[in-house]
Image (cartoon, rainbow, N blue to C red; front, side):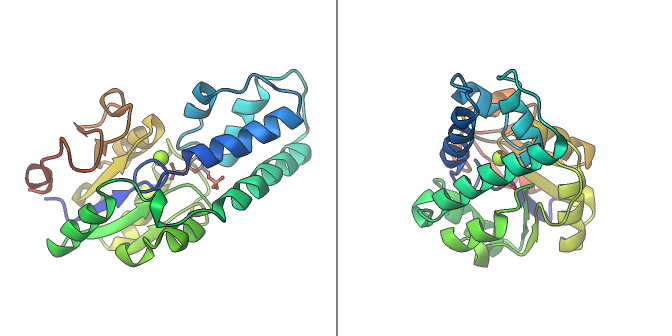
Length: 215
Ligand code: B16
Ligand code: MG
């Protein structure tokens, strides 16, 4: 029986994808990489900041030392943080609040499993913080999805066994991480059918039978 649901953040509860894209695109252009596209950005979903940088750099021809790469990743994050200043509750995705309320009413614990180090800021700015029982984010882990660490930490913080948790994800890396954590998953978003999750739906309600999933 499912006693806790662990939500990914970007692309599941909030829409920050466009902000990530704009920030990476700005950095890419400064590096002389003019062909960084939304398809490249799709591959960055659920992937760590440093691994996301590699996806940008592989489109160019210059090589950089580890120190230079760390500076570039910080620069992108500065651009992203600047864009996050505009973030508010309008960025919360359809059915997110309704679903979080429904789960809480049913006594299901709610976890957050995101590799983003901007998770606390995003939860505050969107007003989602009060809906979440326990947060596992980039500050709690050393390995990014597809490693299961972020979900294992979330289950531990919720006080639940791994198999008592369901993961909700919009990225293939996140679904692989859930499987590795011995958790079933619900894939959402435009690619939901392609993610390899046990359940799939465009959003958090339209094709989801929560009674079936939870029991
Ligand atoms: P940051 P998730 C991921 O969040 C994003 O999908 C991914 O695009 C980003 O690179 C990563 O967080 C790190 O985020 O640079 O803010 O620390 O999907 O795990 O919620
Ligand atoms: Mg995501």
